[in-house]
Length: 316
Image (tube, rainbow, N blue to C red; front, side, top):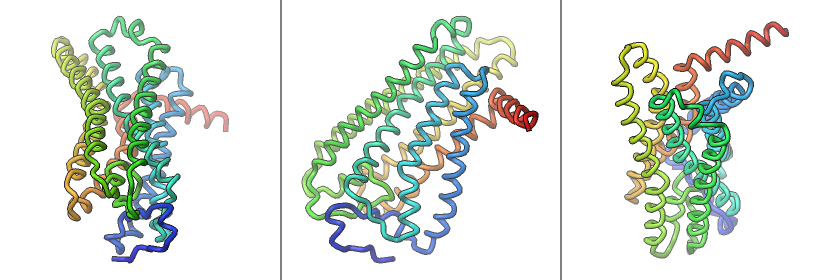
């Protein structure tokens, strides 16, 4: 394994160990992650642009989807470029200020996404169970307010956890066992008992992840009940198609999140090795796949793409 630089400048910052356990795979990882990152930027940017340009997509569903795409853009940009620089330069250092900023942004965006996914589930519940009163229950002003609640809640949680984590003494420890700065990896650097921080972290998980997941399950239980009562098979197919993309995104998001929390508990070297690929999937694969899931299964988005491309060809 490549030796990590241990020069004195690390006392004012950290070393991101990243994937140094697999030095022969790092160049392959550099190429693969670069491609995935470009696809993530392109796919999520396309969703945002389409939702703004096509009037047919000016609905609550696509408003929240544009917010989700913006979240994924910011989320990957907060971690992936730093990882690519570290792999290429083998320096792996990150300053204290940048690390804390990365931790705050990373946690804030992920917390916001949890709340936003539950809001999107409630939106689908109203669309399927109360279709005739959908525009009354989900006006544009309410959608903006709900999106604001998601952002404020997510970053309020991040602010609390970031402050508590940054106050812990490290006693000279500076090697972070990940490719980006996050709360669990930072807690492992502390030289004091972190049980208060861990209790606070898992309490935040309940509020930010478990409660929204409960709302999502409640919404989809009622959606399934409503769909079963639909007489025509075409109507049932349309209802399931409307909710299928969002449900698949929720499964991917929470599936990878649960896997990550499973590896964070033990501190063995094997657990750390397994945790890094899971962190990479959680931080890169799901943001890249989200636009594909929505565009490949959505006729409205496909129609918007054809319309805009057709307009550009006519102008050309």
